[in-house]
Length: 282
Image (cartoon, rainbow, N blue to C red; front, side):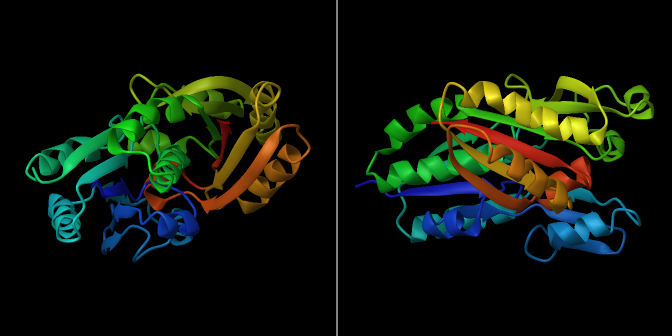
């Protein structure tokens, strides 16, 4: 009989209830300062990272292969037979390739690693839906076959407070930077499905308009389908609340999930002021 484990990295953002309910295993990134390094979401919180960014912008490193080995050994000891791993975009991190190397050493576990070509709730929603399918009794292959459909139903957009951190971290992808920032042009950003890097969906002038535009974009999904909506932010709770209140006025909202702070591993590059909205069509 199949026993399926769910695995992800700490760039994933989803609520603790979901993590506990579906026993999601998390591989932790490291947040690195000149004074030392910290385990993401264990030894340092998103708020601490954002608050300290004016003093020092940390670096990050992917989960160690030793940590991956330890998780796989534990899953074998717990008599799991299969692993479904949903990981941060390979366009942002080497986690996908490292985990693939480790998983191939563990022949007793049949592993499927899915490159989310995204991050944050872009990973979390897929994991949550996989957890539901396991709970419903679907087998490994049925769940694996369903993941691309789950992915296609997610529409994730976000706005940075500033492009400074993405530019310094080299993770700005295909977003035009300096000129637009001088003119207060705020790009609405999404992840490209081919390469998993940040691209510009639209551009507006000013912070308030950019947040309003993300809500307007959602209308084209909500006009046709019921949606669950997920909202994340980087030390921008007030703006996240404002977006939440605007979305409440729209039709076909199944649920709105206020996930809270974006993972520090994402926050290192997105910076404070980031607000993200994911429309998940039902």
